[in-house]
Image 1 (cartoon, one colour):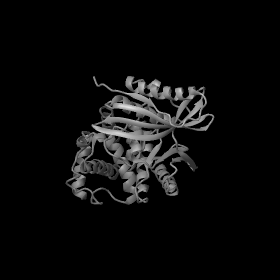
Image 2 (cartoon, helix red, strand yellow):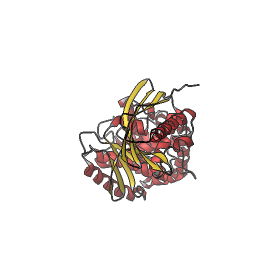
Image 3 (cartoon, rainbow, N blue to C red):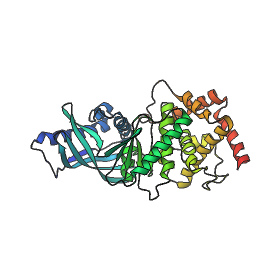
Image 4 (cartoon, rainbow, N blue to C red):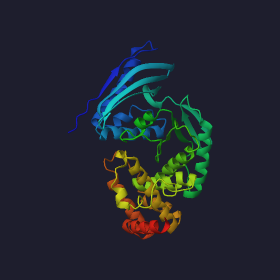
Amino acid sequence: MKKKFFTVIVFLTAIFFSCVSVEEKLTESWNDKITAINTSDSDLYMSTLSTEDSYYRNESYAWFWYMANNDFQNLSFNITGVEQIDSRTVIVHINQKHIYAGENFDFNYNIVYRYQDGRWLDCDLDFLRHDIDGFRIFYRGNENNLQSFERYLINSNEILSDLFGTGVDENFPVKLYTDRELLRQRTYPIIERQFTAWGEANESLKIWTGHPAIPPYEGTIRHEIVHHITLKISRNYLAGWYAEGLAVHYGNGAVFGGDFIKSGRLSRSDAAWNIAKLESIDMASMTDEKEISCFYGISALIVKYMAETWGDDVHRKILEACAGEDFFDRAKSEDSESILQPVLHSAFEQVTGETAEKISAGYLAWLEKTY
């Protein structure tokens, strides 16, 4: 049995309260978070969160299960300071440390706590907020390209709504991070590489905005909105390779007008994988750049082959066929792909009349003929 050691250390450097009970309640909240992770008690963890933002609750629930189900060692939350904003709002400064996959992590962030329903509750990072048509954008004070991101979001949603028959949720939240490590640690801490953005069906869209060139973010945003829409249609019953193939083909590829072979990132021989090969790869542990390019590029090429063979609408029909009655809890599952891949295979047969093996064979023949 894996042993985990979790602690909360309190070192308050700037307290603005005359009542010690506020300090005590904040410490209790972080102790509850640690206890919840240690005992896999999701109800206890969720009790530390405000109920006002369902997206934040959903992404926090997923984060909790990533932490509880995986081997995070020596996890600690150190409260290093508290700022009082008003009588019912404080910002709590946190230092988090842990070891994962042999790597030591030590980083800081600030969480807004509000006094609601007689308790001090976690209300997310200390973002600023700006609302535009269809979106609520949460950003950091040092964000310099807000208008560009707003334009990309609105344009991508209009195009994808036409393609898939539905768009993003009304007032869909988008969180812009200027700290890339914080994005990883607060979103998908088990992935062993840095990433630029993350989209889910029932969570906010999260983007690291630190790349020096801004125009490529149009493809990134389109990619992540595809994730949100396709996961929503399938009710989260979507195998990893197919989810990424859709997002690359209808996201980045559609914006920049090319696939991974046409752009020179893969050769025809590089792209000669079948679906079984894609399904054998653990996405979270990929670190080799060539393997990453093959995984994303080939997934998108198979999606492209299917669209050229059966029409773009085949993918919406497959997504609908994948959908279960309930929303699939991927974060809680310790091996979600063992559930999702058979669901996708069944949807392929239902919609196209072909097995995954036949689709693979058809793709390889198309690859040879096309490139």
